[in-house]
Length: 273
Ligand code: DGL
Image (cartoon, rainbow, N blue to C red):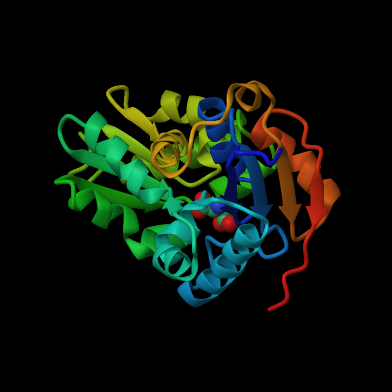
């Protein structure tokens, strides 16, 4: 019998998108997943639109070729810079992280004033600001380039990370945005330091995690797209396949931190440009 369970393709520049996969697994355990981490070419957050778009379109093709029925662009930078290009080149539905994140912020924020933190490229694209303004919110975007390496170093509760994040948030919640009541985590890595950010953000601030809101958006898409899995399939564990463009061993080691459990089936992929 062929499986009626959908395979969801999840794309990220590297390990960070595993925070989105984690949220997807919690909400949609009755799907299979193929995750592609472009670890040989990360970080995307400091690269140009052209480069990110080219890399992301190649990765999306790869996941579609691996049988993905829906693509999740877990990388905020790739979503912000290249969602249109990825969608135009794909033959399956594509869900990015910016729209779901902005939608969640709109429903959480009471005073319609929001701070968004992300990579340099995400912030320069103003993708979040545009999505938030379209919903009647005003947004201050703040690039926090030092946070990705600190999280990858595993310093999620380190005093240096606390100081660095404190400086960034201090600069963001200022100049008319002191009273912003919502902080949007517009980068795959930031959910790992959510407890730390909660502590240092102004006390009245709610945190919106794009990973969780994206998982909810994907669940909505799946309902329209595919028949529900049959009971037996629903009960079996999701099949997880991982693809990385750099060291498989490093993907397993770092990836475990982001996903929260050991990573087994990783294959190395060499995308020809
Ligand atoms: N995945 C990226 C993002 O969410 C962060 C890491 C990178 O710069 O590649 O923006």
